[in-house]
Amino acid sequence: MKRSFRKYHRTLGIILSLPLVLTVITGMLTTFVREWSISIGVPASFLLSIHTGEIFHLEGIYPILNGIGFFGLLVTGLSLSGLFGKKTRSNPKN
Image 1: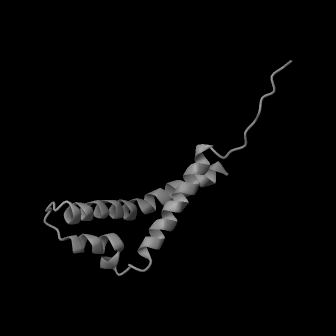
Image 2: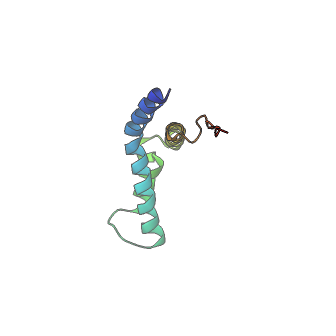
Image 3: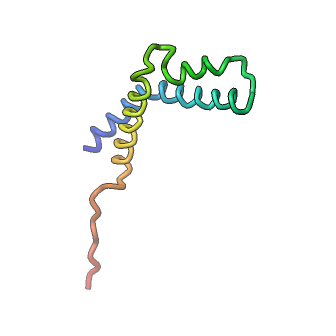
């Protein structure tokens, strides 16, 4: 089972790396431009349209896909970590 989760985790990680990184970077840059008035030469509205997927005409489904993908990475990653595996108790010899 771990082998299949490792395979799914690797595949999800590769597929979702670009959208998740794009969402994180544009969200941070939008905050810098709007709240801290740091000029990077790109308007905040353009950054926000990339952040929400509006520029790709995916604004209705882009956040949902990001969330489902991230949740899938969390589930497979936590299952690989061994936190929820069977605990074996070793009985000390008397």
